[in-house]
Amino acid sequence: MNDFSRSVDLLQREMDVTSLRYQVSSNNLANSGVPNFKRTTVNFESELKKAFDSEENCKNGLHLTTTDNRHIQINVPYDYKDVQPRRVLDYTTKAKENGNNVDAETEANNILQIQMQYRMLTQLTSFEFDQINTAIKK
Image (cartoon, rainbow, N blue to C red; front, side):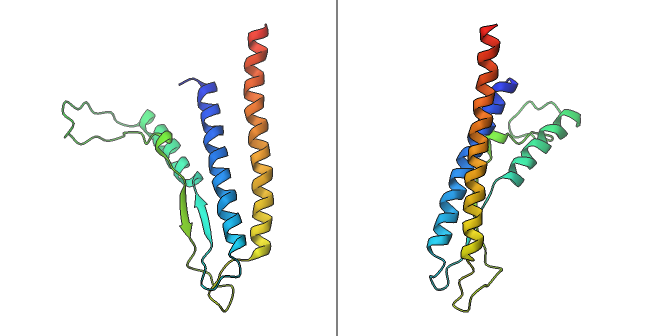
């Protein structure tokens, strides 16, 4: 896959994750007064980093030839396209006496941050396509 396709694919995936984060934070904010509600977060970047690290390790690692699918394979890269965002419930903190651990102010700030991040991602995507348009015109 060329750099343009990979960049656009990663930007699109990150925009999807950002949209999911917006939904999760909005849900957290909406339920900030519900007893025993636990806040949810989205985990994506750490798994994506593992996939990129595995690609790098495979380039520099030992390669074995396998002749059967049942053979043990080592240094098989973890494809970044297989990484999916994961919702994680936060059971470790307790902010209120009713068992709810959502801080409405923190969630509102998260929503603002998510909106700015989504805007930046759309601008980066536009920039990628502008570069292609410039190359085509020349």
